[in-house]
Length: 95
Image (tube, rainbow, N blue to C red; front, side):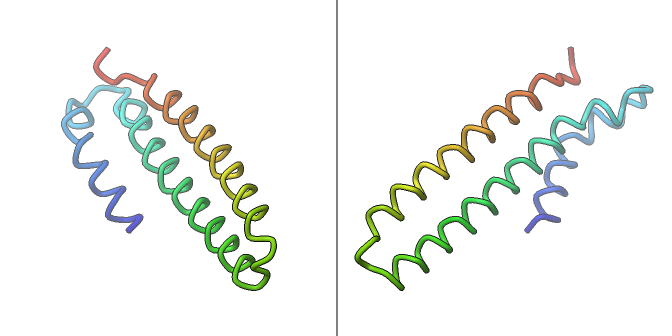
């Protein structure tokens, strides 16, 4: 999955990299960074949900507090992800 995502990102950025400028690696680093940030956030939220569901299945009486903590942690992960995507999008290769 990760190799496919990086491959697709490289296909979208290939025209900018093919220009042959001396900044060609810098120009598509934002796209690579955005892909890595997205994959990392998805992996982190997936691990978070897995651990939360395992905890809820072991102790159903505390499922509400585990679910609340999971939602707060997922929101923090997504907040960092949006900030990182914003930083990656500021590297405009066409400007």
